[in-house]
Image (cartoon, rainbow, N blue to C red):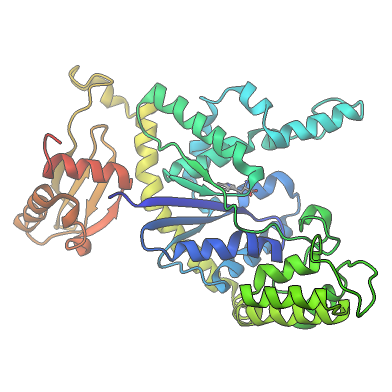
Amino acid sequence: MKTQRVLTGITTSGTPHLGNYVGAVRPTVRASRLAEVESFYFLADYHALIKVGEPARVQRSTLEIAATWLACGLDPEKVTFYRQSDIPEIPELTWLLTCVTGKGVLNRAHAYKASVDKNNAANMDPDAGVTAGLFMYPVLMAADILMFNAHKVPVGRDQIQHIEMARDIAASFNHLYGEHFTLPEAAIEDHVATLPGLDGRKMSKSYDNTIPLFAPRDQLKKLIMGIVTDSRAPGEPKSTDGSALFQLYQAFASAEETTAMEKAYADGISWGDAKQVLFERLDLEIAPMRAVYDELIQEPARIEMTLKAGADKARAIATPFTARLRHAVGLRPLQAALAPAANKAGKSMAPTFKQYREQDGLFYFKLMDAQGALLLQSTGFAAPRDAAQAIARLQREGNAALDPLARQIASRGDANALDAALRSFSEPGV
Ligand code: TRP
């Protein structure tokens, strides 16, 4: 069974708030603990440049968001957690995809269209103040997703169109150059609540109505006391319907606690008391994570190291995959042009093992796919026989040999391609 690859990115343009936590961080951290998924989470800092022109803010937000994910329990050993701008293959793939993306498709992207509509309404030039970065946003996002051949992309509803574009772009590329990309699907978490903000509208940076997730305890309390309510007096029954206070409480409370709060509303709890209960309940969940966050944020160097280790893991996939894509589109070493005619486009050859000796005197092997992309790279063996035995075992046992041989494997390429290549040896004719 192939494991599901789940990938999502967070633009590093602000300070994480309760809405981000309930809508994205909490469900994602929980999902990442499931055994059968392979998760990729990254800080979309290239995307941040589209909206934010303040370098210090991009940097600060990157630090805060990384610290938030770690404080909320994301395990960088289990998932691949990295920063987009640490993967130079992403902008490279962006260009390859740009060349198969219809300009008309991008004209229809919601974010770009909204800017144009606004300009038109104001009788301005349609593209006034619109950068090519905003226009290209969906292609950069497609590169994020397709680089790791993600199956599922958990996002908010506002991002569905981008995932559909990534699918279309992947299909165009596959059509032109062969089956390289998995077609991704959006995973919309229908049961996670959209949190209301201080003013009752959706909690969002753009409404300036957010409650920062890791605001200090006394500031959290002050903000909660400022949530809008109606003017019903203590003792008067209150409606939970449309009550921002109640929705916030519900997002953190258990079913029993929620029922008790419903009853308190009916019994006429004062708004002041209801706010106090909400504050205590929120702080109960947040305080332990806040303590970790406050520590982490003091140690940016540690976070930097974690992200660099994540980038290494991500690049172990991205580097060989990009080599394969470069080859696919014709960015190839020139001597390959003289390769035998049997190697015609479309007719793929079998994957092959190559055994060789390095300058260090040790014996190595690698597995390459039909196009010459690296799928598996061994560590050095003292004797050629040992390398040959490892190859024989991989050919015989296929994927099952990967774990027992883990210590002899220095890096792996694209997981799907590796899986297919090993099967072609261990299950010939399937
Ligand atoms: N555009 C996403 C947002 O603003 C962030 C993002 C960038 C993303 N690249 C991605 C999300 C890839 C999912 C997959 O929410």
